[in-house]
Length: 583
Image (cartoon, rainbow, N blue to C red; front, side, top):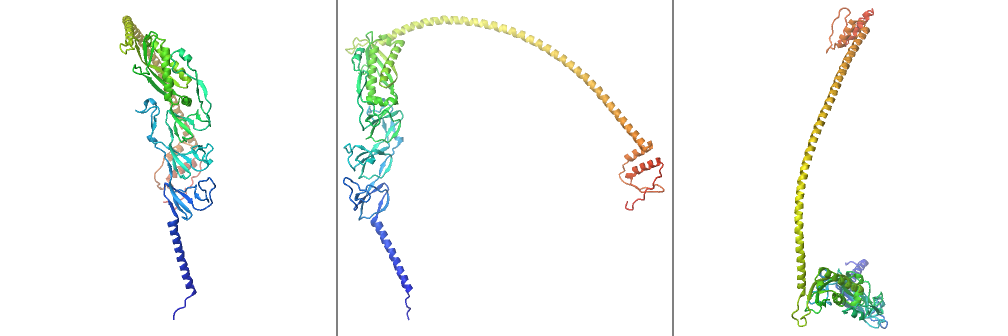
């Protein structure tokens, strides 16, 4: 007979089937999610989503915001996402990395005169792996008020164009459908340089007239006829287009090259040398007052102060232009104008040549100060003097510098010989004076020895007298001490005698008082005997009728008491019988 099914068994089976079905459904959903809906974005990439449904964006809007149809403006970074493929399309785009550069690779040259071979005024004086800045160019939105797609706009404006803000080194999630990223090197200004800033946008200030220094004048008359002013554009202020007054100190700057242009300019002093050579057109050559041609080699130490760098660059463009337009032409002009006032021999003589060098330095410094250029000195390094005869043919040119130098050398040699003769006379006088000094020295030494002997003898005599007086005083003191010792001995002896006598007298008086107290000399003797008698043990003895036992330690007391009683006529008391307890 089979068992009947219970309701509880049916419920259990139903529950198990539901659990199994739920697990299967979860597994199927998980498989579908990971197989169909999962979108994985690896590191170094970002996710661009394209919505297939939603509201249409407003006219003119290229990218869609949340809830709108089309390419979404927001991008998602690396990770795992779940999107419905029927509602979304996706596309992976690389992240934008702006490099930080490697400072250990940066190198630069501190002067255009020390550029490597092939370099020039336009060559890069700084090389290496520089940090980058990211320039964002917005491709969506309305056209900017400037009317061009390359206009500089703010990021919050929403206009198309170059975004004013830049991306510094790092990794960015940029939507390529909204922005184009252009990478430009950051501005690196090394020590010894400054950055002259030029605004690329804004209104330009009006041109102004400034004093001009004639650069090609050869005489004072030509300088008077040359123009004294020229028109330049002044420095710009904030918001204007042009060169700003404030420059950037050395450092690294992340600037937008579409907003500002930085010209790296060397400051401090630099050196320029003009070598004297007939083959060069730049050689400083001019006629002297005496008709000879003078060729000079000059070294000029000049430079720019940071506070004037912007003004100089605004007027001349580069430091090379400063050298070509101011230093070189002014150096030739001043040498011609001032050098024609000197004789040929003046350029050989030290004092006159130094005077000409000072005039050259002061004149060139005055011109440079008008152009905000610092001039430290203009040093004449070499001078050549030539005769004008034969220069047109290129042969027979006579170098007079050697002849002038030889004439001055002969004059100096004659002066030297005269000085040598005077020196010999002075040496003879010096030798004579030395002999006199030796004689005087010996005389002084003899007198010194004599005075020293006299002083030593007086010293010894005074020392002996002092010693004798000392011994006499010591003897007197010793005599006084002996007398005091004798008096001391006498006083001490008398004191001891008096003490002994008083002691004896006191003892006698004491004994006399004891004898008087005891009544007789015999009693005193017995008392003395009993006092000094100290047996070491106790013995019993028989003393006749009326014997008694006693302790010998107290016998002196009993004897003394007995004697006193006898003296007083009292009947002696029979001592008590000894105690049975005694031994």
